[in-house]
Amino acid sequence: MAERARAKRKTKKDGNGIGHNGGPMLGDRQKRQVYERWLGKIEHADVRYEAARDIAKTRKGELGQIYEAAKADGCNIDAIKEARKKHKLDHLTVAQDYDDMGFILRVMKSPLAEQLNLFAKPERDEETNVAMAGELAGRRGDSIDENPHQVGTAFFVTWRAAHERGQRALQDGLRE
Image (cartoon, rainbow, N blue to C red):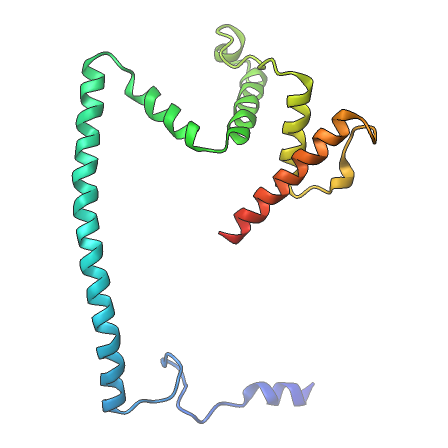
């Protein structure tokens, strides 16, 4: 134990002490070359960023004007934005979120779910439900052996194929 404690106390004698960003100590000439190399790249990237920012600002203004015109014509802008946002998401996740929100509102005994019936359980055919369950299980990382359907049935095959899609989506998400 004492040997390990002593081994940890060893310090490097190459100048990489506290407050140093690592690497060998550079002379003024080498340091200048490093800064010259990076300053040019930074300046180039900054100019490109500023140009893109100006274009984005102009486009955002145009989008705002279009939203204002649509609002003046009677459109519900918040609903449009929310619908567009949901449409860009994974549709399986949106469907599951909708189901979960309806369930939570029913647990809360909310008028949204009970009286207005806004979040009624959507009627989907059984094969769609099986596919959704399989893909969600795959995205969660559940084992393919957790398939609840009888081996060889159509639902077993559907769940398994959807689980594999979910696994691919999970893997793709990890790569990003």
